[in-house]
Amino acid sequence: MSNSVLIINGPNLNMLGNREPEFYGNETLADVEEKCRICAKELGLKIEFRQSNGEGEIVEWIQQSSENFAAILINAGAYTHTSIAIHDALKGSGLPVVEVHLSNIFQREDFRHISYISCLAEGVICGFGSQGYVFALQATAQLL
Ligand code: DQA
Image (cartoon, rainbow, N blue to C red):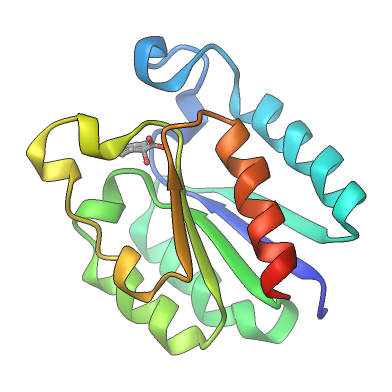
C-alpha cells in the first residue's frame, strides 16, 4: 500500500486519440496507461489507473482512496476548473496529490487558468502531453 498510487482521469479523457489532437496528441488513454505501467514498474510503484466522466464517482474513489493508496495522481479534466467537491474530497483524503494535465492550461482560455486542485497539490505538471504522467509518477515516487 505504501507504494500504491491511484491515477484518476476525469471527463472526456476516455476520448483521447480522437479529441482535439492539437492539444492532447494522438495517443489513446490506453496508451497513456501503458506508459504509466512501464514507468511505475521501473519506479517500484503499483498503480491503479481509472477514468470517469462522473464527478460523483471521482469523489467516491477519492473518499475510499486512503484505505488502499499512498498517493493520488489526478488529471481531473474540466472538473479541475469547476469542482469544489473534488477539491474537498482530495483535502479530506489526507493523501499527497500530484496534478497533471496533458496540455499547458496556461496557454489556453482564461477559464482553464483556475484550478481547484493546485492549491492542495504537492505539485502540478502540465504541457508535456502523456510524458507529463511519467514526470508526475517520478515526482510521486520521490514524495513516497
Ligand atoms: C486537461 C485540460 C482541461 O482544461 C480539459 O478540460 C481537459 C484536459 C489536460 O489534460 O490538458 O479535459 O485536463
